[in-house]
Image (cartoon, rainbow, N blue to C red; front, side):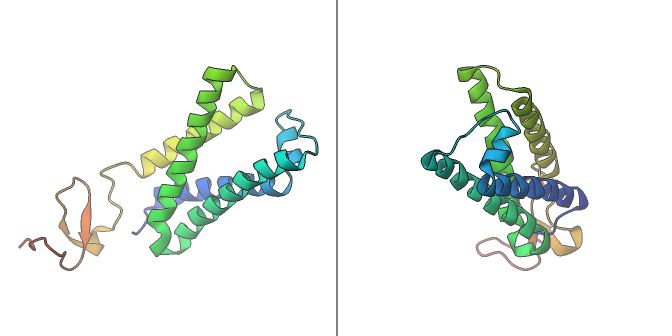
Length: 159
């Protein structure tokens, strides 16, 4: 999958954000959460429960960035970006419904996550060509999707 310019920007913003936030949670959780007005203390179980998803977020951010430089990883990178930046706002909205309004810092994080999600959804919207026209010689039965040059097993070649 060859990424267009806007898609690279979206993936870069998503990847750098996820990598940076994930690393902060993994390696300095007290400092990271203190910036939101949350005091964690030193309970090893709590810190472990925070570091684990922080490390997962770090790994997903690295995958997003790897998709910028390794064409073979670009589809996985797009999925990672959409999962992270749709999942985090969804979880925050659940928190708003069940727990009430959080601090201004958490609301700012929600706004940022929604903005990145919107950018990713726009950049990778259905129907947006993921391959350059020169890379394709036929269209698929699905709107906006194309097949790479060559034959596709079980599909007759158009003339």
